[in-house]
Amino acid sequence: MWALTLYRSTIGKKIIMAVTGLVLVVFVIGHMAGNLQEFLGPARMNAYAAFLKSTGELLWIARIGLIAATVLHVLMAWQLTQIKRAARPVDYTKREPQVSTLASRTMRWGGVFLLVFIVFHILHFTTGTVFPIASQPGDQFSHTDVYGNVVSAFRTPWVTAFYVVAMLFLLLHLFHGAWSSVRTLGLSKPSDHPLHRRISTVIAVVVWLGFSAIPVAVLLGVIR
Amino acid sequence: MNLTLQVWRQPGPTAEGGLKEYKATDVSPDMSFLEMLDVVNERLIEKGEMPIAFDHDCREGICGSCGMMINGVAHGPSRGTATCQLHMRSFRDGDTIVIEPWRARAFPVIKDLVVNRGALDRIIAAGGYITAPTGSAQDANSIPVPKQDADASMDAAACIGCGACVAACPNGSASLFTGAKISHLGLLPQGQPERYRRALSMVAQMDIEGFGGCTLFGECQAACPKEISIDVISRMNRDFLRAAVTKPAERSGGGGDG
Image 1 (cartoon, rainbow over the protein chains, first blue to last red):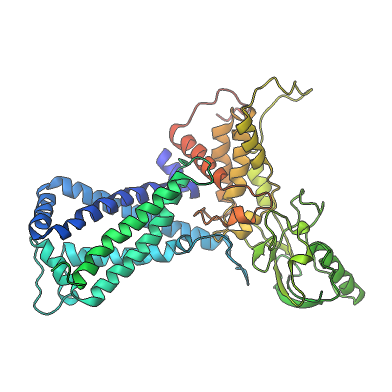
Image 2: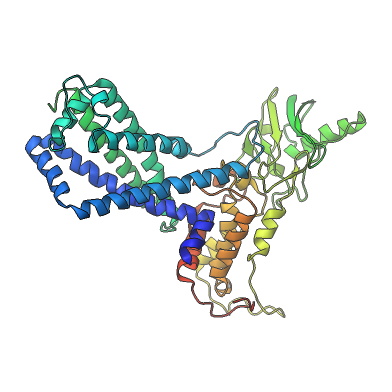
């Protein structure tokens, strides 16, 4: 069974991470594009949210798919981290990284932070569970007024700060992750200036700017 | 030049080890790093102390025997060279140099700076060969090989198995080594019959030896004395993935184990 062959190998685990990672990259781009409708006003944003909810089973299929991808991604990362720890029981007194990027070196802890962020984010904007503690007094969570939820949430500076910091981690995670997924899958052609490096950089920067723009715009009063 | 060395001393595989300080005085900048250690060792022997054990053989960057972590960098500060090709002019008078053995579970320390790199040999034994009838070599041009394939294969075949990729990798991964071995055969016509079985068995052996996984830090290709590119890792993954998922049929091959 090929899935088992993959699961049992470090390369296979990495391939699973690459595939699930790319699924999440596609989601994140779509999510960002959808969110940017916040700039087009309450009618447009809430209509978009209502449309997503109207898809019923399709929405749940997408949600389950995304949760499955996230769980697999995190599980493989955790297992590979255990293997990595075991691979060097006695560490160096001194080891100087030569070429590795900040992004590559923050994949593990940055990933943990992103997981915490995702859980908070779902409890914040999807279920509204933590909405009251992350809002100013008087602000109510509404399942139909997505536009209003966003505006109330990001009027609180620490909430905006938390989201902006999380998006910085997402920038780093995508910068290394989107690039390395392509290499892990062996899809890259040998090149000194590979196309997948440029595309990954563009994705990371665009997603970071797109997501950060909304909370910052609310805090600055551009969206109200 | 006068230098301070902090060298990992460990009397045996199971003994406790630790960094010990030595003064290396009157070092010529023209000495190689290993010659500097030779001088330090001669003085240790004169004093009746145990010399620092380190691996070396050809001392011209071909055999892959030497290798140590020098100030936290595999094979030291100069790029594309093995430890034996590093010269003392790369350091400044008064420098402190920390010297440690390769660190990996798969590379147990034998003594001081000498590690057992048998794990790499076992990865090769798992599939890093071709099955060919022996006898007189056939004419060199009887099997055409595209120039770019021959070049790429030769670049991968430059691997001397020194283990610097493993040593420099934050994950302790042997992906560059295994990728180089898989690529150099897989790029050539002679390597095709066993190409996919080779990828599966060499990767399996790599995992059995307890190396970590690749997260594409890129430290390995910076440490490699032969400057082998991480492109070989992509190629290994591609062959492994195809082998695992589609189980390509072998058109020919030696073993009867199916």
